Length: 496
Image (cartoon, rainbow, N blue to C red; front, side, top):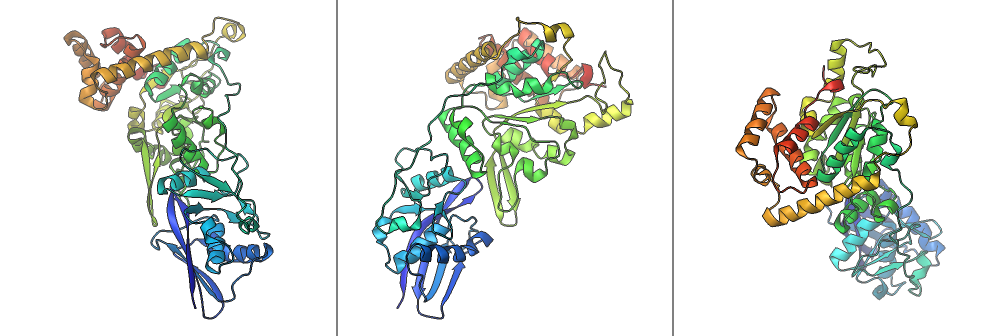
Protein backbone atom coordinates (compact mmCIF):
# COMPACT_ATOMS: atom_id res chain seq x y z
CA UNK A 1 0.00 0.00 0.00
CA UNK A 2 1.31 3.40 -0.98
CA UNK A 3 0.57 6.90 0.32
CA UNK A 4 1.45 10.07 -1.53
CA UNK A 5 1.23 13.81 -0.86
CA UNK A 6 2.63 16.95 -2.53
CA UNK A 7 3.72 20.19 -0.85
CA UNK A 8 4.56 23.43 -2.60
CA UNK A 9 7.97 24.98 -1.98
CA UNK A 10 10.48 26.99 -4.03
CA UNK A 11 14.17 27.28 -4.85
CA UNK A 12 16.21 30.40 -5.47
CA UNK A 13 17.45 30.83 -9.02
CA UNK A 14 19.25 34.09 -9.58
CA UNK A 15 17.18 36.60 -7.61
CA UNK A 16 13.86 34.82 -8.09
CA UNK A 17 12.19 31.97 -6.23
CA UNK A 18 10.99 29.29 -8.66
CA UNK A 19 8.08 27.09 -7.46
CA UNK A 20 8.90 23.46 -6.78
CA UNK A 21 6.48 20.63 -6.03
CA UNK A 22 7.78 18.38 -3.22
CA UNK A 23 6.19 14.99 -3.98
CA UNK A 24 6.45 12.44 -1.16
CA UNK A 25 5.75 8.74 -1.68
CA UNK A 26 5.63 6.32 1.25
CA UNK A 27 5.23 2.70 0.18
CA UNK A 28 6.28 -0.90 0.60
CA UNK A 29 9.83 -1.96 0.03
CA UNK A 30 13.20 -2.00 1.76
CA UNK A 31 13.32 0.79 4.40
CA UNK A 32 15.07 3.76 2.78
CA UNK A 33 14.86 7.52 2.42
CA UNK A 34 15.88 8.99 -0.94
CA UNK A 35 15.57 12.43 -2.51
CA UNK A 36 15.58 12.83 -6.29
CA UNK A 37 15.08 15.76 -8.65
CA UNK A 38 18.56 17.33 -8.91
CA UNK A 39 19.02 18.23 -5.21
CA UNK A 40 22.28 19.78 -4.02
CA UNK A 41 24.31 18.57 -1.02
CA UNK A 42 22.33 20.69 1.46
CA UNK A 43 19.06 19.04 0.34
CA UNK A 44 20.57 15.55 0.50
CA UNK A 45 21.62 16.27 4.09
CA UNK A 46 17.98 17.15 4.84
CA UNK A 47 17.29 13.43 5.30
CA UNK A 48 19.11 13.36 8.64
CA UNK A 49 17.63 16.66 9.83
CA UNK A 50 14.10 15.59 8.88
CA UNK A 51 14.45 12.19 10.60
CA UNK A 52 15.69 13.76 13.83
CA UNK A 53 13.14 16.59 13.79
CA UNK A 54 10.16 14.29 13.19
CA UNK A 55 11.14 12.03 16.12
CA UNK A 56 12.01 14.95 18.44
CA UNK A 57 8.55 16.49 17.93
CA UNK A 58 6.66 13.31 18.82
CA UNK A 59 5.83 12.16 15.29
CA UNK A 60 6.69 8.77 13.80
CA UNK A 61 9.25 8.40 11.06
CA UNK A 62 7.96 5.81 8.53
CA UNK A 63 9.82 2.52 8.46
CA UNK A 64 8.72 1.92 4.87
CA UNK A 65 10.41 3.15 1.72
CA UNK A 66 10.26 6.96 1.42
CA UNK A 67 10.91 8.68 -1.90
CA UNK A 68 10.91 12.47 -2.24
CA UNK A 69 10.76 13.91 -5.76
CA UNK A 70 11.46 17.60 -6.35
CA UNK A 71 9.62 18.57 -9.52
CA UNK A 72 10.41 19.72 -12.14
CA UNK A 73 13.28 17.28 -12.29
CA UNK A 74 15.24 19.32 -14.85
CA UNK A 75 15.70 22.26 -12.45
CA UNK A 76 18.61 22.17 -10.01
CA UNK A 77 17.45 22.80 -6.44
CA UNK A 78 19.58 24.38 -3.73
CA UNK A 79 19.37 25.35 -0.08
CA UNK A 80 18.17 24.00 3.25
CA UNK A 81 14.69 25.51 2.86
CA UNK A 82 13.30 22.17 1.67
CA UNK A 83 13.58 20.63 5.17
CA UNK A 84 10.14 21.84 6.25
CA UNK A 85 8.16 20.86 3.11
CA UNK A 86 9.80 17.42 3.03
CA UNK A 87 8.89 16.80 6.68
CA UNK A 88 5.33 18.05 6.15
CA UNK A 89 4.94 15.89 3.06
CA UNK A 90 5.97 12.79 5.02
CA UNK A 91 3.63 13.62 7.90
CA UNK A 92 0.71 14.38 5.57
CA UNK A 93 1.30 11.21 3.51
CA UNK A 94 1.30 9.08 6.68
CA UNK A 95 -1.76 10.99 8.01
CA UNK A 96 -0.01 12.19 11.14
CA UNK A 97 -1.29 15.73 10.52
CA UNK A 98 -4.35 17.23 8.90
CA UNK A 99 -3.32 17.96 5.30
CA UNK A 100 -5.90 20.74 5.05
CA UNK A 101 -3.66 22.86 7.30
CA UNK A 102 -0.98 23.08 4.61
CA UNK A 103 -3.07 22.82 1.44
CA UNK A 104 -2.71 25.89 -0.75
CA UNK A 105 0.48 26.96 1.01
CA UNK A 106 4.09 27.40 -0.04
CA UNK A 107 6.29 26.05 2.75
CA UNK A 108 9.94 26.91 3.30
CA UNK A 109 12.25 26.55 6.29
CA UNK A 110 15.25 24.77 7.73
CA UNK A 111 14.81 22.28 10.57
CA UNK A 112 17.04 21.82 13.57
CA UNK A 113 17.57 18.37 15.10
CA UNK A 114 15.08 19.35 17.84
CA UNK A 115 12.45 20.28 15.26
CA UNK A 116 12.79 24.05 15.44
CA UNK A 117 12.04 25.87 12.18
CA UNK A 118 14.61 28.41 11.06
CA UNK A 119 14.27 31.17 8.50
CA UNK A 120 16.54 31.14 5.46
CA UNK A 121 17.90 33.94 3.30
CA UNK A 122 15.85 35.27 0.42
CA UNK A 123 12.50 35.40 2.24
CA UNK A 124 11.30 38.30 0.09
CA UNK A 125 11.80 36.14 -3.00
CA UNK A 126 9.64 33.40 -1.44
CA UNK A 127 6.96 35.95 -0.54
CA UNK A 128 6.84 37.19 -4.13
CA UNK A 129 6.73 33.61 -5.45
CA UNK A 130 3.85 32.66 -3.14
CA UNK A 131 1.90 35.76 -4.12
CA UNK A 132 2.46 35.08 -7.82
CA UNK A 133 1.27 31.46 -7.45
CA UNK A 134 -1.79 32.49 -5.42
CA UNK A 135 -0.60 30.56 -2.35
CA UNK A 136 -0.19 31.48 1.31
CA UNK A 137 3.29 31.30 2.87
CA UNK A 138 4.29 29.10 5.83
CA UNK A 139 7.76 29.79 7.20
CA UNK A 140 9.74 30.65 10.31
CA UNK A 141 9.68 34.15 11.73
CA UNK A 142 12.81 35.97 10.49
CA UNK A 143 14.66 37.98 13.15
CA UNK A 144 14.09 41.20 11.24
CA UNK A 145 10.51 40.38 10.18
CA UNK A 146 8.80 39.79 6.85
CA UNK A 147 7.92 42.42 4.28
CA UNK A 148 4.17 42.82 4.08
CA UNK A 149 2.88 42.28 0.56
CA UNK A 150 -0.70 43.00 -0.40
CA UNK A 151 -2.93 39.96 -1.02
CA UNK A 152 -0.45 37.55 0.59
CA UNK A 153 -1.31 35.56 3.72
CA UNK A 154 1.72 34.63 5.81
CA UNK A 155 1.81 32.13 8.69
CA UNK A 156 4.82 31.54 10.89
CA UNK A 157 5.79 28.54 12.98
CA UNK A 158 8.60 28.11 15.47
CA UNK A 159 8.61 24.31 15.60
CA UNK A 160 7.43 21.30 13.64
CA UNK A 161 5.28 20.36 16.66
CA UNK A 162 3.07 23.42 15.93
CA UNK A 163 1.46 21.37 13.14
CA UNK A 164 -0.11 19.04 15.72
CA UNK A 165 -2.97 21.48 16.30
CA UNK A 166 -2.25 23.90 13.45
CA UNK A 167 -1.18 26.63 15.89
CA UNK A 168 0.21 29.17 13.44
CA UNK A 169 1.33 32.65 14.46
CA UNK A 170 0.84 35.93 12.69
CA UNK A 171 4.18 37.15 11.37
CA UNK A 172 5.93 40.28 12.53
CA UNK A 173 6.18 42.63 9.57
CA UNK A 174 9.03 44.99 8.94
CA UNK A 175 8.18 48.65 9.05
CA UNK A 176 9.76 51.32 6.89
CA UNK A 177 11.90 53.00 9.50
CA UNK A 178 12.96 56.58 9.06
CA UNK A 179 16.42 57.41 7.86
CA UNK A 180 19.16 57.76 10.40
CA UNK A 181 21.78 60.52 10.39
CA UNK A 182 23.72 60.60 7.15
CA UNK A 183 26.72 62.35 5.66
CA UNK A 184 26.41 65.77 4.07
CA UNK A 185 28.27 67.62 1.33
CA UNK A 186 28.56 70.54 3.75
CA UNK A 187 31.31 68.48 5.40
CA UNK A 188 33.41 68.66 2.22
CA UNK A 189 35.56 71.77 2.01
CA UNK A 190 35.77 73.40 -1.41
CA UNK A 191 35.30 71.24 -4.50
CA UNK A 192 32.35 73.31 -5.72
CA UNK A 193 33.04 72.32 -9.34
CA UNK A 194 33.07 68.62 -8.38
CA UNK A 195 29.84 69.07 -6.40
CA UNK A 196 28.23 70.67 -9.46
CA UNK A 197 29.36 67.72 -11.58
CA UNK A 198 27.95 65.25 -9.04
CA UNK A 199 24.67 67.18 -8.99
CA UNK A 200 24.44 66.89 -12.77
CA UNK A 201 25.32 63.19 -12.56
CA UNK A 202 22.59 62.63 -9.95
CA UNK A 203 20.02 64.59 -11.96
CA UNK A 204 20.58 62.58 -15.13
CA UNK A 205 21.83 59.25 -13.74
CA UNK A 206 25.20 59.74 -15.46
CA UNK A 207 28.32 57.73 -14.67
CA UNK A 208 31.30 59.70 -13.41
CA UNK A 209 35.08 59.35 -13.09
CA UNK A 210 37.05 61.49 -10.63
CA UNK A 211 40.80 61.61 -11.08
CA UNK A 212 43.21 63.35 -8.73
CA UNK A 213 46.10 62.94 -6.27
CA UNK A 214 45.76 61.13 -2.92
CA UNK A 215 43.88 63.08 -0.26
CA UNK A 216 42.08 65.32 -2.72
CA UNK A 217 38.63 64.23 -1.47
CA UNK A 218 37.46 61.84 -4.19
CA UNK A 219 36.13 59.23 -1.75
CA UNK A 220 34.43 61.85 0.43
CA UNK A 221 32.65 63.27 -2.59
CA UNK A 222 31.51 59.89 -3.90
CA UNK A 223 30.34 58.54 -0.53
CA UNK A 224 27.91 61.45 -0.13
CA UNK A 225 26.28 61.01 -3.53
CA UNK A 226 23.29 58.99 -2.18
CA UNK A 227 22.36 61.99 -0.01
CA UNK A 228 21.36 64.00 -3.08
CA UNK A 229 19.58 61.20 -4.95
CA UNK A 230 15.77 60.96 -4.74
CA UNK A 231 14.29 58.22 -2.49
CA UNK A 232 13.66 54.83 -4.03
CA UNK A 233 10.31 54.43 -5.74
CA UNK A 234 8.21 51.43 -4.63
CA UNK A 235 9.15 49.26 -7.62
CA UNK A 236 12.84 50.20 -7.25
CA UNK A 237 12.66 49.43 -3.53
CA UNK A 238 11.25 45.94 -4.09
CA UNK A 239 13.84 45.16 -6.77
CA UNK A 240 16.78 46.38 -4.66
CA UNK A 241 15.47 44.67 -1.51
CA UNK A 242 14.99 41.41 -3.45
CA UNK A 243 18.61 41.31 -4.57
CA UNK A 244 19.88 42.07 -1.06
CA UNK A 245 17.51 39.53 0.50
CA UNK A 246 18.70 36.74 -1.80
CA UNK A 247 22.31 37.66 -1.03
CA UNK A 248 21.62 37.54 2.70
CA UNK A 249 22.28 41.28 3.16
CA UNK A 250 20.39 43.66 5.44
CA UNK A 251 17.53 45.49 3.72
CA UNK A 252 16.63 47.93 6.49
CA UNK A 253 18.13 50.99 4.81
CA UNK A 254 16.54 50.07 1.47
CA UNK A 255 13.09 49.83 3.05
CA UNK A 256 13.75 53.29 4.49
CA UNK A 257 14.06 54.54 0.91
CA UNK A 258 17.84 54.89 0.88
CA UNK A 259 19.61 53.96 -2.31
CA UNK A 260 22.33 51.29 -2.07
CA UNK A 261 25.96 52.40 -2.06
CA UNK A 262 28.38 49.59 -2.87
CA UNK A 263 32.13 50.01 -2.59
CA UNK A 264 33.91 46.76 -3.60
CA UNK A 265 37.63 46.50 -2.96
CA UNK A 266 39.89 46.59 -6.00
CA UNK A 267 40.90 42.98 -5.32
CA UNK A 268 37.32 41.83 -6.11
CA UNK A 269 37.06 38.84 -8.43
CA UNK A 270 34.97 38.60 -11.57
CA UNK A 271 32.33 36.56 -9.74
CA UNK A 272 32.33 39.00 -6.84
CA UNK A 273 31.70 41.97 -9.10
CA UNK A 274 29.31 40.64 -11.76
CA UNK A 275 27.93 37.54 -10.00
CA UNK A 276 28.71 33.85 -10.05
CA UNK A 277 29.61 31.02 -7.71
CA UNK A 278 27.66 27.84 -7.05
CA UNK A 279 24.80 28.35 -6.65
CA UNK A 280 24.83 31.52 -8.72
CA UNK A 281 24.67 34.62 -6.52
CA UNK A 282 24.38 38.31 -7.41
CA UNK A 283 27.56 40.37 -7.57
CA UNK A 284 28.29 43.93 -6.52
CA UNK A 285 26.83 45.45 -9.69
CA UNK A 286 23.51 43.77 -8.89
CA UNK A 287 23.65 44.73 -5.21
CA UNK A 288 24.08 48.33 -6.41
CA UNK A 289 20.80 48.16 -8.37
CA UNK A 290 18.85 51.36 -7.79
CA UNK A 291 21.88 53.03 -6.26
CA UNK A 292 25.57 53.76 -6.69
CA UNK A 293 28.49 51.47 -7.51
CA UNK A 294 31.69 53.19 -6.37
CA UNK A 295 34.94 51.78 -7.71
CA UNK A 296 37.68 53.42 -5.65
CA UNK A 297 41.19 53.13 -7.08
CA UNK A 298 39.59 51.89 -10.29
CA UNK A 299 42.98 51.61 -12.03
CA UNK A 300 43.96 48.93 -9.51
CA UNK A 301 41.11 46.61 -10.56
CA UNK A 302 42.01 43.80 -12.92
CA UNK A 303 41.34 45.01 -16.49
CA UNK A 304 39.37 41.85 -17.31
CA UNK A 305 37.10 42.45 -14.30
CA UNK A 306 36.51 46.08 -15.27
CA UNK A 307 35.64 45.25 -18.85
CA UNK A 308 32.96 42.83 -17.61
CA UNK A 309 30.80 45.74 -16.47
CA UNK A 310 30.75 47.48 -19.87
CA UNK A 311 27.65 45.71 -21.14
CA UNK A 312 25.62 45.98 -17.90
CA UNK A 313 26.20 49.76 -17.80
CA UNK A 314 24.15 50.12 -20.98
CA UNK A 315 21.67 47.23 -20.69
CA UNK A 316 20.87 47.43 -16.98
CA UNK A 317 21.22 43.66 -16.52
CA UNK A 318 23.90 40.99 -16.45
CA UNK A 319 23.47 37.45 -17.75
CA UNK A 320 25.75 34.95 -16.03
CA UNK A 321 26.16 31.69 -17.93
CA UNK A 322 27.47 28.54 -16.28
CA UNK A 323 27.17 24.80 -16.96
CA UNK A 324 23.84 24.69 -15.13
CA UNK A 325 22.37 27.39 -17.36
CA UNK A 326 22.05 31.15 -17.67
CA UNK A 327 20.70 33.47 -14.98
CA UNK A 328 19.90 37.16 -15.44
CA UNK A 329 20.53 39.59 -12.59
CA UNK A 330 19.40 43.23 -12.50
CA UNK A 331 22.26 45.73 -12.78
CA UNK A 332 20.71 49.20 -12.97
CA UNK A 333 23.33 51.21 -11.15
CA UNK A 334 25.04 54.57 -11.33
CA UNK A 335 28.79 54.08 -11.77
CA UNK A 336 31.15 56.41 -9.92
CA UNK A 337 34.87 55.71 -10.16
CA UNK A 338 37.93 57.34 -8.62
CA UNK A 339 41.57 56.97 -9.52
CA UNK A 340 44.99 58.41 -8.93
CA UNK A 341 46.49 59.79 -12.15
CA UNK A 342 49.66 57.69 -11.93
CA UNK A 343 51.32 54.97 -9.84
CA UNK A 344 52.83 57.44 -7.36
CA UNK A 345 49.63 59.46 -7.39
CA UNK A 346 51.05 62.97 -7.83
CA UNK A 347 51.02 63.61 -11.58
CA UNK A 348 49.73 67.18 -12.03
CA UNK A 349 49.95 68.04 -8.33
CA UNK A 350 51.56 71.46 -7.75
CA UNK A 351 52.62 70.58 -4.18
CA UNK A 352 54.19 67.15 -4.76
CA UNK A 353 56.60 66.09 -7.48
CA UNK A 354 55.57 63.12 -9.62
CA UNK A 355 58.26 60.43 -9.92
CA UNK A 356 56.61 58.46 -12.73
CA UNK A 357 57.70 58.38 -16.37
CA UNK A 358 55.29 59.28 -19.17
CA UNK A 359 55.11 55.60 -20.15
CA UNK A 360 54.24 54.56 -16.60
CA UNK A 361 51.48 57.18 -16.45
CA UNK A 362 50.00 56.07 -19.79
CA UNK A 363 50.13 52.40 -18.81
CA UNK A 364 48.49 53.12 -15.46
CA UNK A 365 45.63 55.12 -16.92
CA UNK A 366 45.15 52.65 -19.77
CA UNK A 367 44.31 49.93 -17.24
CA UNK A 368 40.79 51.39 -17.11
CA UNK A 369 40.45 50.71 -20.82
CA UNK A 370 39.22 52.98 -23.60
CA UNK A 371 35.87 51.21 -24.13
CA UNK A 372 34.94 51.58 -20.46
CA UNK A 373 36.15 55.17 -20.35
CA UNK A 374 33.93 55.94 -23.33
CA UNK A 375 30.93 54.63 -21.41
CA UNK A 376 31.56 56.83 -18.37
CA UNK A 377 29.70 60.06 -19.07
CA UNK A 378 31.46 62.63 -16.87
CA UNK A 379 35.21 63.01 -16.28
CA UNK A 380 36.32 65.39 -13.51
CA UNK A 381 39.72 66.34 -12.12
CA UNK A 382 39.74 66.73 -8.33
CA UNK A 383 42.52 68.77 -6.70
CA UNK A 384 43.39 69.02 -3.04
CA UNK A 385 41.73 71.88 -1.15
CA UNK A 386 43.86 74.61 0.40
CA UNK A 387 44.32 74.71 4.19
CA UNK A 388 42.18 77.87 4.32
CA UNK A 389 39.28 75.98 2.74
CA UNK A 390 39.72 72.94 4.97
CA UNK A 391 39.78 75.00 8.18
CA UNK A 392 37.16 77.52 7.09
CA UNK A 393 33.56 77.35 8.27
CA UNK A 394 30.36 78.26 6.46
CA UNK A 395 29.76 78.93 2.80
CA UNK A 396 29.91 75.23 1.88
CA UNK A 397 27.24 73.85 -0.43
CA UNK A 398 25.31 71.16 1.45
CA UNK A 399 23.40 68.10 0.34
CA UNK A 400 19.99 69.68 0.89
CA UNK A 401 20.61 72.45 -1.61
CA UNK A 402 22.15 70.07 -4.14
CA UNK A 403 19.24 67.67 -3.77
CA UNK A 404 16.74 70.43 -4.44
CA UNK A 405 18.39 71.03 -7.81
CA UNK A 406 18.37 67.30 -8.56
CA UNK A 407 14.68 66.91 -7.73
CA UNK A 408 13.70 69.98 -9.77
CA UNK A 409 15.70 68.76 -12.77
CA UNK A 410 14.16 65.28 -12.60
CA UNK A 411 10.67 66.74 -12.28
CA UNK A 412 11.24 68.98 -15.32
CA UNK A 413 12.69 66.06 -17.32
CA UNK A 414 9.69 63.88 -16.43
CA UNK A 415 7.28 66.59 -17.53
CA UNK A 416 9.23 67.12 -20.74
CA UNK A 417 9.25 63.39 -21.56
CA UNK A 418 5.54 63.02 -20.85
CA UNK A 419 4.86 65.97 -23.11
CA UNK A 420 7.16 65.10 -26.00
CA UNK A 421 8.24 61.49 -25.52
CA UNK A 422 11.18 60.03 -23.65
CA UNK A 423 14.78 60.25 -24.83
CA UNK A 424 15.36 56.50 -25.05
CA UNK A 425 16.89 56.35 -28.54
CA UNK A 426 19.53 58.40 -30.31
CA UNK A 427 16.97 60.07 -32.56
CA UNK A 428 14.66 60.96 -29.70
CA UNK A 429 17.60 62.34 -27.68
CA UNK A 430 18.66 64.55 -30.59
CA UNK A 431 15.08 65.69 -31.05
CA UNK A 432 14.71 66.50 -27.34
CA UNK A 433 17.80 68.73 -27.47
CA UNK A 434 16.43 70.79 -30.41
CA UNK A 435 19.82 72.32 -31.23
CA UNK A 436 19.77 75.22 -33.66
CA UNK A 437 22.08 75.16 -36.68
CA UNK A 438 24.81 77.28 -35.08
CA UNK A 439 24.96 75.19 -31.88
CA UNK A 440 24.93 71.97 -33.90
CA UNK A 441 27.85 73.18 -36.01
CA UNK A 442 29.72 74.07 -32.83
CA UNK A 443 29.21 70.56 -31.43
CA UNK A 444 30.33 68.98 -34.72
CA UNK A 445 33.47 71.13 -34.73
CA UNK A 446 34.37 70.17 -31.16
CA UNK A 447 33.65 66.50 -31.85
CA UNK A 448 36.02 66.55 -34.84
CA UNK A 449 38.68 68.47 -32.92
CA UNK A 450 38.69 66.02 -30.03
CA UNK A 451 38.08 62.93 -32.17
CA UNK A 452 34.95 61.98 -30.25
CA UNK A 453 33.28 58.65 -30.98
CA UNK A 454 29.62 58.37 -31.85
CA UNK A 455 28.95 57.21 -28.32
CA UNK A 456 30.93 60.16 -26.97
CA UNK A 457 28.86 62.63 -28.99
CA UNK A 458 25.61 61.11 -27.71
CA UNK A 459 26.93 61.11 -24.14
CA UNK A 460 27.74 64.81 -24.51
CA UNK A 461 24.23 65.51 -25.78
CA UNK A 462 22.78 63.54 -22.88
CA UNK A 463 24.76 65.59 -20.35
CA UNK A 464 23.76 68.82 -22.11
CA UNK A 465 20.11 67.73 -21.95
CA UNK A 466 20.47 67.19 -18.19
CA UNK A 467 22.12 70.61 -17.72
CA UNK A 468 19.24 72.18 -19.63
CA UNK A 469 16.75 70.33 -17.41
CA UNK A 470 18.48 71.83 -14.38
CA UNK A 471 17.92 75.27 -15.91
CA UNK A 472 14.30 74.31 -16.76
CA UNK A 473 14.99 74.91 -20.46
CA UNK A 474 13.07 72.92 -23.05
CA UNK A 475 15.81 73.50 -25.66
CA UNK A 476 19.54 72.83 -25.28
CA UNK A 477 21.65 75.93 -25.91
CA UNK A 478 25.32 76.56 -26.53
CA UNK A 479 26.01 77.22 -22.84
CA UNK A 480 24.61 73.81 -21.98
CA UNK A 481 26.73 72.16 -24.67
CA UNK A 482 29.86 73.94 -23.46
CA UNK A 483 29.33 72.80 -19.87
CA UNK A 484 28.69 69.26 -21.11
CA UNK A 485 31.90 69.31 -23.15
CA UNK A 486 33.80 70.54 -20.10
CA UNK A 487 32.51 67.59 -18.11
CA UNK A 488 33.07 65.11 -20.91
CA UNK A 489 36.51 65.93 -22.30
CA UNK A 490 39.56 64.93 -20.30
CA UNK A 491 42.27 67.40 -19.40
CA UNK A 492 44.44 68.35 -16.43
CA UNK A 493 45.56 65.36 -14.33
CA UNK A 494 43.51 63.07 -16.53
CA UNK A 495 45.66 63.44 -19.64
CA UNK A 496 49.27 62.92 -20.48
